[in-house]
Image (cartoon, rainbow, N blue to C red; front, side, top):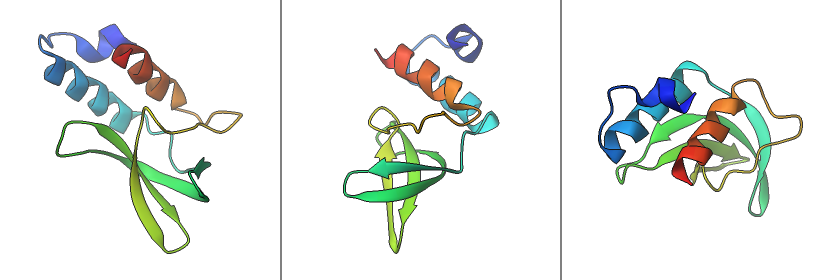
Length: 92
């Protein structure tokens, strides 16, 4: 999966963008998870200005972004979550 996402990507930024693109194409959202202090619904993903891939979450009236690396996945994991795991593996 990582190889598919990073083909022709030579820098870390290009590889991250390739993984982000496939995360967008194979969405795992929406799904419910726990974000510190609140149950939240992951509505989608985005690329933060600093280059991190983040999950866009809502919980009640609160909206926040949580780094994909810090996001806990529910059990069973939603369809498409394998791309989140591939990104985590790539990120080390």
